[in-house]
Amino acid sequence: MNLDQFNAYCGSLPATEKVVQWGGAHVWKVGGKIFALASRWGKSPGEGKIKIGFKASDMAFMMLTELPDIEASPYLGRYKWVQLQSETALPDEDIKAYVEAAHGLVAAKLTKAARRELGL
Image (tube, rainbow, N blue to C red):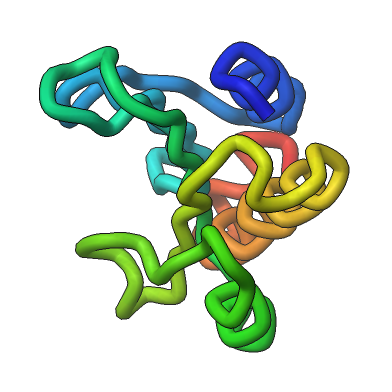
């Protein structure tokens, strides 16, 4: 999955917003909380391979981090975030399913009032 496809998919999920921060990372949020991000991590912004990161369930985190080209996300791994080290680490449909699940995990932790306000 490339960066444009990632952004288009995340933008199709309910009540999402994108911000660009941390040296050009495309950070996707629901209710102000991050559920997925992607960037070209390299020696300078915009260079290097696209790496996608997202929140995972406990079981998904354990399974995914056993696969090649998938690691615990730097700084966020302790919160069960994974980072895909290549665009081909998972098939696009699997990435979409995990990103949708990440959206659901994060949205579920919002207050009832916030979820209602966002239409979730």
